[in-house]
Image 1: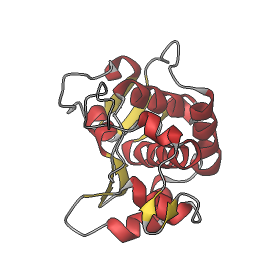
Image 2: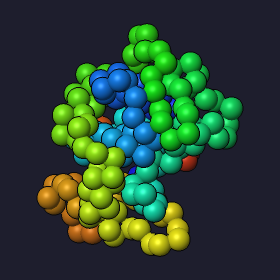
Image 3: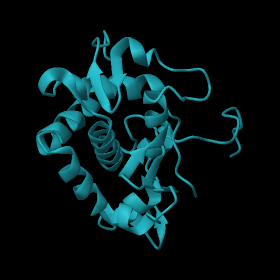
Length: 193
């Protein structure tokens, strides 16, 4: 079974904007923002059964990265749905700043709670210290191969962090909370699946 979620570009933009709104000067560099968003998605998935953004996470040279969020931030999101990112965020070289706070935020209570916890734990870290920290994460160490970008499967996160409760007999245990948000390759009208 492959655990996948539908990417929500609006939630991605709102999560990035929320993180920036809480940071000194309402700005940071792209590497740090992507690391904070990765950690928030990972922790929300582990605690609530789904990532905040629904993004795919990849092990890349600068550490784990929510790739579709990075593409969105770089103005390279493929399907024309840019979620008005540049209404809210301003990019310049490697620095990202908050231009405008999305009103209203489309994030839920659990998402704000996780974003706040990530900021409290890692927000004050220097970018390169945070990058070094994420290079030590077990999921990154297991998946990164120099010269490539490799998907970090959600199944691996369950194997590493659930202490056997959500990964048994070498298989993930998909909760109803996960299933409700997972990408389904079948037509949702199929009742016999």
